[in-house]
Amino acid sequence: MEKKLILLPAIAMIILTLYLYIRNYLDNRKAIINKSIKFSYLKTYTGEVPNYVAVSRQTLKNQFELPIFFYFLISIILVFDKVSRLDLILAWIFVASRYLHCYTRLSANYIPHRAIVFTSGMLVLIVWWIIFLYNIL
Image (cartoon, rainbow, N blue to C red; front, side, top):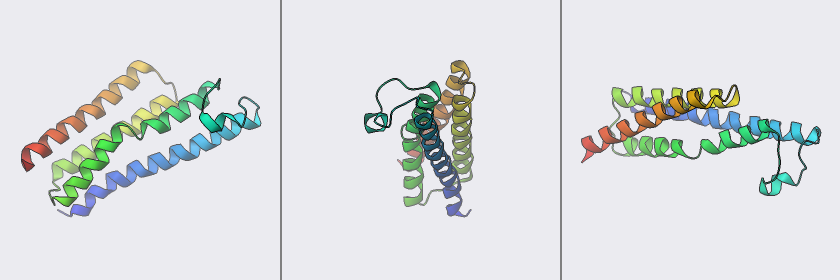
């Protein structure tokens, strides 16, 4: 199997993160133009803000929490030259869970659904790490 294929899910995650940066920028810009927030808010990101600004920012911040373990695992798998079909399947399931989590958060933001999607992605990642560690150690 072509080991470079494991980079495709990582690229999909990077695209999601870049989209969220753009979304966050546009949401902040809209709030500043509407005078819902002051420009000074961007210095410390503290103070009262419209819900859509807070949700946008938190969704972006989430991309630097759990996904860090995803990127790190992909890097290690590439270093050890241990890319398998199962790695690809688990990587794509994790990516799908992150896209669904972002969609849920940015739309209805219904916490029970968001929690299910987040937990699913986290469990996939945990199982993937366990499988990797078992195979490598």
